[in-house]
Length: 110
Image (spheres, one colour):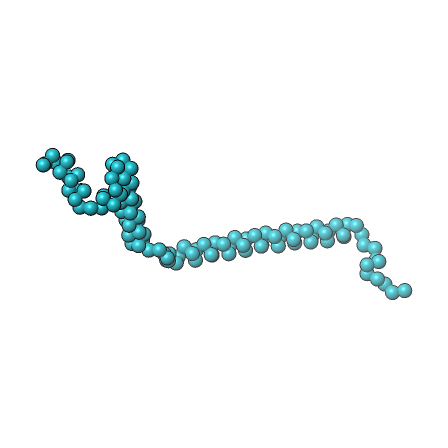
């Protein structure tokens, strides 16, 4: 008969030691993977922090867009207020004669 290594009897103590050693090795590998992952994240964060920020929508363009939206909201508000509260035509608020009339009323000139 040939000797089969799997059929040989080993002592239970040796089996426990090898299981403990392999478990310890697995724990060490897990720890090394976690530290490697943490170091990789740290390097990525530092690289991102050191490069200048590229803005797709520049600040000066943001300011211009906000001013345009504010002016549009102001004109729309005037048109709604003049048409609903003042019972006038919404487009009359854009005429110069309307504003001259309002200024005359405020200054009380005939």
